Length: 462
Image 1 (cartoon, rainbow, N blue to C red):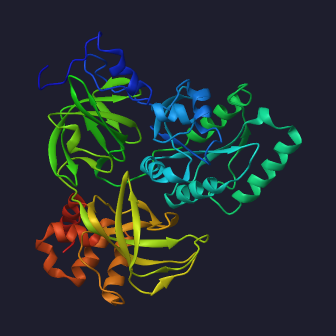
Image 2 (image 1 turned 60 degrees about the vertical axis):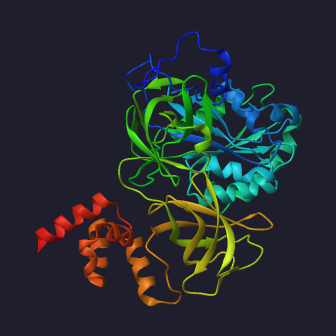
Image 3 (image 1 turned 180 degrees about the horizontal axis):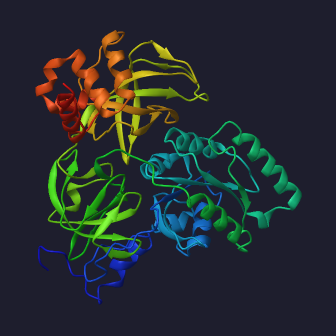
C-alpha cells in the first residue's frame, strides 16, 4: 500500500467492511467511483426520543440497517452509542441518518451526533406517550436550532385506535410552543410495517425544500467516531458542517494540532473524490495512530481556524430549568461532538432566571474550535441535566470583564451586521487592530478572508 490513495482489494476481510456498513459508513477505499455522487441537497436526519420507544427498530424498518452494532447493545436491547445509516426517500434523495441513544445516561452520546442534524425524527411510543427523555431530547434539538421534523408514533400494533388517539392529542398538546408545533404525526409499526410509506412520504416532503443549515465558513468536521481499518490506518467519521473535503487535502486535527492529509473518503457506502457539507463522511487519514484521535476533535481543512478556551455567546436558560443560572456556575459544554467542562461567566447580570437569556463568556478547561453562529448546549455539572444553550458570537478574543459597557457593545456589534460592518465597528474602537488581522478577525467574529475583503473595501471607500 502506497502513501497515495489506498487500494482496498475486493477480497478485503468481510469483518473489516461490515462494521462500517452497519454504521452506514464503510471504510474509505479507492478503486471505486472517482466522481462525487451526492444527493440533490445533502441532509442529515436524526432520531430523538425516550429509551425503548423504538427508534432503532424504526430506522431498521426504513433503511434495512440495524444501527445497534455493539455486543452490549444486542444483549441489553438498548442503544448505547450513535448509530448511522443511509435512507433513500421515494423521490430518490438520499439522507444520512443518525440514530441516538434514548437512555438518560447516554445523552452525552446523543449530543455528539445531534450537532449536524437538519431534520428531526421524534419518536414517541404509542403505548406510553411523552416521557422524560422525549422532553430533554426536544429541548436539545431546539437549542441546536433544528426547526423541521416529523413525529413518529411507534408501536401502533400494541394499542387500540382509541388509546392511540389520546396519545396523539397529548403529544400535539405538548408540542405547542415548540419548534415542532406544526410537525406531522404519523402512526407506524416496526413490527407490521403499517405507516412506513406515510412516514417516508412526510420525510420526503419536508426534505425537498430543505438545505443543509449554514454552519459558518470553516471547512470542518466534528469527529464523532474513530476506528482502525486493518492494513490501511485510522478512520474518523462525522457530519461535514461546511465546505468540502477532497482526497489529498491537507488537514489538521484540533485541538491536538496533528497535521495530516486525506487518503480516501466515503459517503453513503461509496468511495468519492469529494464530500460536501451536510453529508456523513468517513475519512481515512494518513499516518495517524488511532490512539492520537478521539471523539470531540475537529477535522479542519484550510489554514483558518484555531481552538480556544474562551467563547463569547448569547446564552438562554431553559424555561424548564429547576433553578436560575448563576454567574460562575461550572457546566458541561457541548459543541459539535465535544464535551468540555467550563464556567459560565454572565457579563451583565448575576443570574439568569428560567427562560431568560443574556451575554456570557464560557471559560473552558480545555480548548475547542468555535465559530460565530455555532450552537452549543450546556448541561449542569451535577446532577447532569440539560439546562441551557447558546450561540457563539466571538471566540478567543480574551477574557471579558463583567458589567463593562465596552465589552457588551462589542458583542452586540459582532452579533449583527455584515462582515464589513463588523470590521468597521471594531476598528472604530480599536484602530490599532488594522495591522493585526488575526486579532481583528477574532474581535469581529469574521474569518481571515472576510477581514481581508472588508479591509480592501474600506480602503477603497476611503
